[in-house]
Length: 346
Image 1 (cartoon, rainbow, N blue to C red):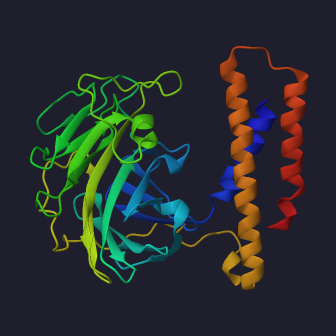
Image 2 (image 1 turned 180 degrees about the horizontal axis):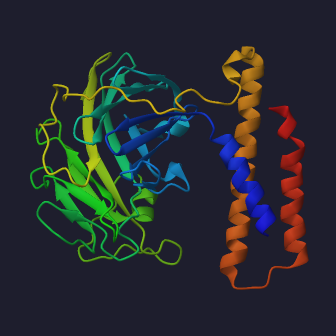
């Protein structure tokens, strides 16, 4: 079983080699150059160790939904992404038939990153456009101290803030006081209409926003146990053709107590500080002919899904409480052997 898990882990490391990283003080942002998904880390003082600030095992659990008319699409799944480094951070342009969404992540002087989404109406008619940001927090789950805010030192049950009752910041941190603070705009025209602290699966399974249940804990039995998350809601509003709306949020080190107002004016930015592995060390697949590049990416995506399936099978076996049989191992090994055969194709 250890050999199987080691293979899967190695496969994911190889698959995740293409990343674009930037630093802001003791914080590190790492963006997958193919999908646009990202990870955020708090670095130790000596820069030798790091703690993920959002759930890291599957970065797809933190994501953005965009609504356009009666359609709701997940940004990383339903849009094509073009990613580039800028002088102060990273720019990602997501394109779909319903909209063009531009994400600019800028390193700030206060140990953190400013996220700015510009959602442009790509059609010929005015349409209602909205956005939901889901951040899969986890740091406070171990000690059941899920969140704190500028107004509340301890949050252990579901909470919903309206546009007029937003705290100055929301914090997720662990027992070692490592964590982050989330800031949003206080401008009524730019602030989210609601912020919800709730079970991740409850939010994820909802088409838009689950009904708030006061004093509810962060468990949704039987599978989502003590699993908390933060959701930001910018309700749909009318956007004219070729016009856009902007949303902002700021993720900072949990030592940051205040920041400049988040409004239409950009915040002061720190000098761009790429890490040593900004340029992928793997042979660049961009050098291949377009058709071959597309074929390789398709193979990688299929094999990535296969690896996820294998991991799920292993997880099911371990959590079932039953003995693992030779037949179980043989089935998993056969799937791994099939992945191994295809390694030479990319």
